[in-house]
Picture (spheres, rainbow, N blue to C red):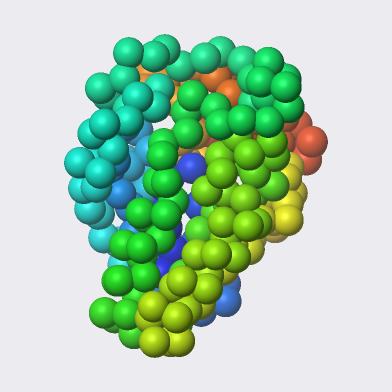
Length: 229
């Protein structure tokens, strides 16, 4: 096994998986999916389908207790509702910088630590995760920033005995750029789920639905997840 990919079942992580399979081959990739106490399991179901599509090994784990004290609006125990406005609108209300309600505290830090432990155990040399420039903007998700990625990359490299490297191949791209790369690779976006709500169909009005719609529109294509369901 050469590469670990954090796979949530959304557009970004699916694009990362497509890139990893192109680089290493499906037999050398292990996808990791974590349940963290989110309000619905739609993304996890999507991750399973994406992993099957690519024929990669897939491991699921439950990390929900780590976030039991958090009031992130993504979590089951939260009293907050999912906001129906874009990230840009939310950041504007905060003066241009600040964490959004859907930020789950240090989630990527925990996920990457889990991935690093797994990588050392199976001898993987690389970890991919799908942070991109839109998530980092205004520090809406501080565990998606270049500074965070650099710090975690150092920690993982040193903590693994200098055997494993962290890569965030989408970090310099916005969502439209991510989708462009995924379309080039033939990523199965029809299988993915991004919406923060857990309905039968994407709500179309939460921040991630808004960003996803704009990304596909920027590439001049319809979102296959909407046309296929």
